[in-house]
Length: 229
Image 1: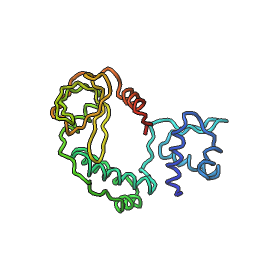
Image 2: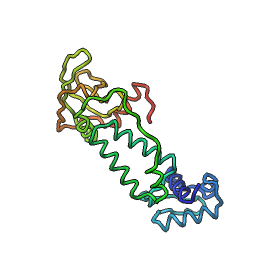
Image 3: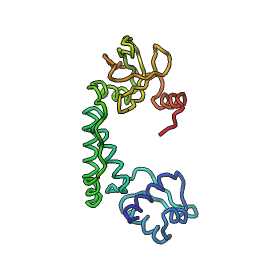
Image 4: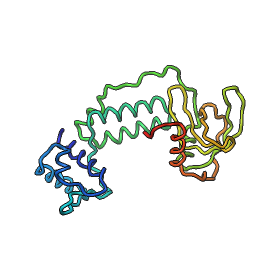
C-alpha cells in the first residue's frame, strides 16, 4: 500500500468511528508502527483534517474534511469507470451525459499516475441484447423521486389495458430489458411496479406524498425480502 492510499485508508477508518479510536488500534489495522501513524496524522492535519487527539482515548475526526487530491485504488478506479460506462450506454441521454461529466471531474483532480489508470481502463460495456425503446419520462421520474412528489400517470399493462393512477414514486430499477418504477399506488393501496416505457402520460403534482422516500423504500424492501445494498 502506497502512503497516499494509506492516508485515505486512515481517513476512512476514522470516519467509521463516532468516538475516539486508540492509536494502537489504528496502527494495527493499517499494519504500520505507532510512529508512522503519528506522522500520517500530522500530514492529514497539515492538509486540513480536523483530527483531535483525546488523552487516554485516541483520535477522532470531526466532520467536514475531504482529502485532496482524490485517491483511489486500482479496483476502485475500475469500478468507477465500469459503472460510468454502463450508465452512459444504458441510461437515458441526460443521465448518460451526467456520468461522463462526473468521470471527467474525477479525472481532473486525480494525481497523474491514477489519471492514467482511469484513462487506460480495459473494462468495457458490451452491446445490449435488445435495445430499449426511447423513454422520455426517466428524467421526470428521477426529479419526482428526489422531490418526493405525487405523480399522476396513464399506464398500459401487459394486456394493453390503460388505467389512470396517482402514485408515490420512490425508486427506479435499471434492468437490461426494462426500467421499472417502484411506487406506492393510491388506486391499489399498495406497492406496485411500472415499466417506464408503458407510461404514456406522466404529470408531476405539486403535492408531496405523506411518507418519506427512505421509509417507503425500507417498507418495500421488507415486503419483497430484499436486503439493503
